[in-house]
Amino acid sequence: MQQPSSLQLFGRLVLVTLLILAAIWLLRHFLPALAWAGVVALATWPAREWLVGKGMRPSGAGILLALIVGVLIIGPLILLAVEMAREASVVVETVRELREAGLGTPEWVPQIPFIGMYVAAWWQDNLADADAAKELLGKAESLDLIQWTRSLGGEAVSRLMTLAFTLLALFFAYRDGPTIAKQSHTVADRLVGPSAERLGEEAVVAIRATVNGLVLVGLAEGAVLGAAYVVAGVSHPVLFGFATALLATVPFGAPLVVIVACFALLIQSRITAAILLLLFASAVVFVADHFVRPALIGASTRLPFLWILLGIFGGLETFGLIGLFVGPAIMAAVLAIWRESAKPDRATAH
Image 1 (tube, one colour):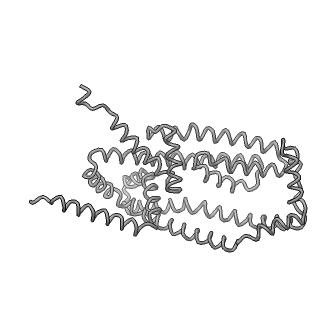
Image 2: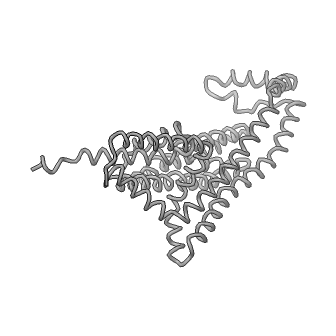
Image 3: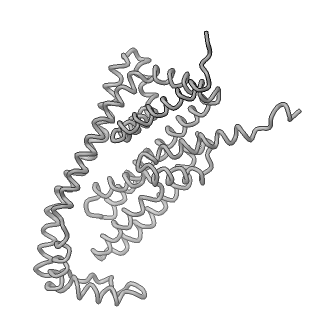
């Protein structure tokens, strides 16, 4: 059989490259959904293997797991929407009272070191006085809230479409995963060589470890600090706990919610509760971010803590939320290549 010429090989390479670029361009709006489906499938693949091992057909396992993932995602969002709807009436009532009588200066504000008197004066001029409060609210209401609401509605519809395609792609990933993995191994072996399988394994381990280190630890932080909000007497502890669990998936993200909760306690002149909550939450976040997460992610991927953080934050900045999991996978593959290249050559070692 005649071997293809160099010109034919070059033409084939150009054609394949153009087709791949065209496919990426065609699917550009669905790439986030496909990426999320891949991350979730890799992270939950042991559950799929367990179901199939118990005699369930791959299609049935795919449907069941996709439904479970959908419920786990949609359920908290519905809870958040219900809580926000309940709080809407409280916000409206607070704004009405602020318009009519203003918001009195809390007793603790003048006691703040160095800036207490300045903050108290600003509060008295802009919030405590009813006329000044009306003027301040009028400036806030002059913003195009209708346009903001429309933009928020459009974003919500877009996210729901992404979720729908994610669950659909997730079902096919569960059903056809072994075939896809086998074909990917064959193609990667032809293009890269035997090291492709090892790099793929490093990436898969990194994704699973990152999901455990970010999502599970974030949920645990949200549960623990949610209980702390209840004990401290923070208003709407469920809402604060959900926000904590969501932001805790990013290292050092939970303190943002804790600060808001402590500030809410300070407004109620509950200084002792605010200080104790801040100290307890700081200890929880410190242990989670400096010990638990590095142990879960680093032990599996053999990534130093610095490279874990660089992968997480670099991926978040470059790819968005999906980058939380893609970033460490890329860093794990790069570090695996570095370690492989740094090994002494057997021929020169002797």
